[in-house]
Image 1 (spheres, helix red, strand yellow):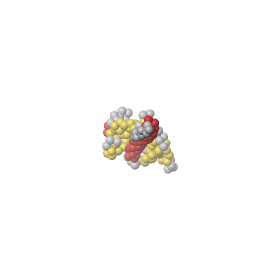
Image 2: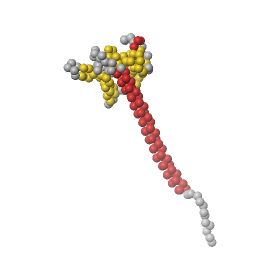
Image 3: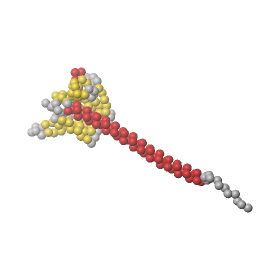
Image 4: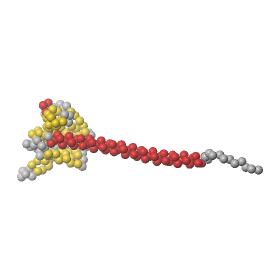
Length: 180
């Protein structure tokens, strides 16, 4: 008696389970890799935005301090007030009264047209808070007797030769161009 030959071309249950397990492992590894890549992309984008914001503030500080009127200039380690011919809103042009103040929220910036400025009650027309500037400070370079120069933490009655702006680990030394 001959045995019937079964030529069934299907897969056994064990083969199907093994292949599904392998596919699940591959999918899990791929998903973890994509999650890491997306997280890295977001952190990189956030870092680039922080650097762009920092560069814009540094450029604004350099332009305004360099073009500051040396007769009206005062500040300490956490704030700086002066008049400048460079405006955040309008660029170079009419003089504006500018104030930078460092507090827990970040670096607060305000400006008002010099013609509208009244000491003690200035109606600032432009107010901006730049976040991410918690470790920042100002120093002022003055010519000491004998021709030597010295950095101090508060502005004196004379105009400084330069202003040092420390932002985190970086230091900007900005000379006043309109110094008299």
